[in-house]
Image (cartoon, rainbow, N blue to C red; front, side, top):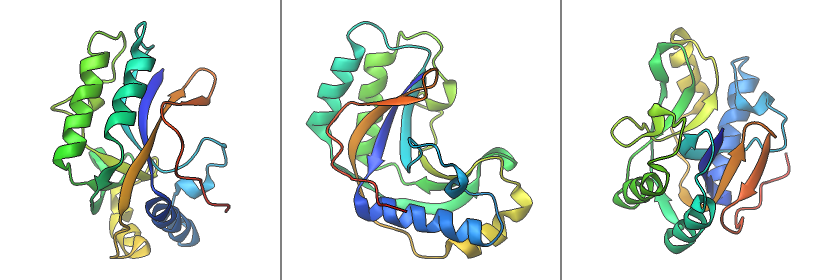
Length: 178
């Protein structure tokens, strides 16, 4: 599997990581517990089995031309009732246009994850995986009412087979030391 992901500005990443920490401190599932070096807040635009020939270069050019784009956080939700706990994003015109352009590049790729396709995509930043809907109220209290602000400033691709990332643009958001 290969993804196209947007990375958060430092201010936005700090806010999401703080929410991860508060969830963990409340005894709830949290991505703060994922210690893999590639784990950081991100927005997934697409996931496919493999990039078609030339797609990585086209995606890099596309992302470099449009980033940064604003990130507008909305409410905390549990997707599908018993799956990820997420911070929903309001789909700004810039974000919707970038998402569509990414799929123009990847439209013929094999193994496309249908959740990321235009029309089905729910833009979000993950807070926890395998979360129970029954804990949503507690999670919202732990996350708090403040919504971090920021932008998406860089793009990367995650390779699920090797568990490595390839930057599609310069990583201008240096992850904080936690």
